[in-house]
Length: 268
Ligand SMILES: [Zn+2]
Ligand SMILES: [Zn+2]
Ligand SMILES: [Zn+2]
Image 1: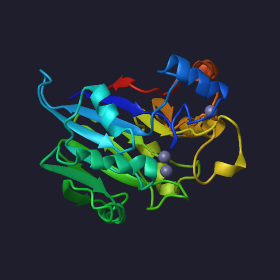
Image 2: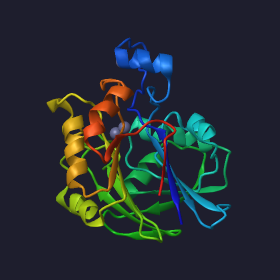
Image 3: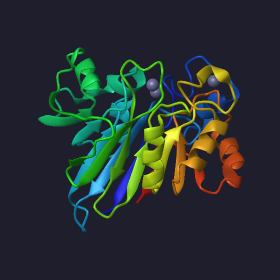
Image 4: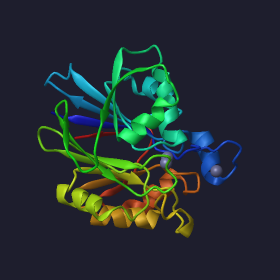
């Protein structure tokens, strides 16, 4: 059955525009908003369970600080499950927005990440589903395989997810990562040859500073090229990147690599 991937937030931990920043990218974002403005990280997967699309599984990848507004904006407020990539402010604090909103919500990540978030005592009833990296599990009608990525500053060991539906359509989402992910993870993605890869691109300048934490544009392009993915979308972009239209123009020569933007819907 089809899956819609909805980009809730394509920005980095501070978002674009960054508060008090007057750079060209931030000023354009203030003036023109989407696709120039970027909220903090969030991806929503809507998996349709029947042909009239009346029944869905709604899965959220991470719970950033803009979550409440993002779900209202997407018109999808009822979430079945949260898959957490890692613990960093911009991927977790929005979880508190589920306070008093739900019965029980499935939360899926490593045991370490699930234990970490417990310390915050968010008042949300959860069903914890701990995963082991590289071990495939069935979640509802999906096959889910978590894999380690490279994100040195993360507060818990960072994960990406490979998700396959019942028609063998595959989505790989790395979350925050540098280029040099573990060999086993790269092989998992390459062997899967995902229909869609969503990966990290923090800055369009080639800089050494972020190598073990995020990718620069040239690395993200290289990662897309070696991944065997059919289409790649770059996100987690900071205001250090040139504005959206210039990035798109630059990527025109790379047919299957795209700049993600807030509210974008990718249908599989
Ligand atoms: Zn992040
Ligand atoms: Zn700026
Ligand atoms: Zn992070």
